[in-house]
Image (cartoon, rainbow, N blue to C red; front, side):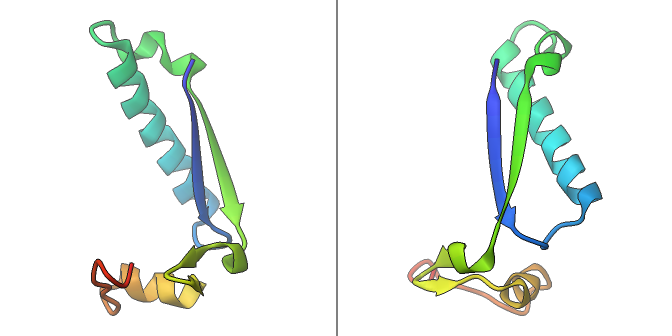
Length: 85
């Protein structure tokens, strides 16, 4: 019985995106864990918990990740190097 925990920046995803993410990740985990049996055998017992984290607790390189920074990254207007991440 897999339990998956996904943490996202609070307010960064709408309910539809969160549900899609949970569904797709659950399907992949069930498929991998259930091989060679069909994933449908394990999917009803695969749980996904999505936690929304406040930006002051979502920190990258010592700086809180704000919704604005995340949006800039999504749109390709922000690029971090490995040393910055």
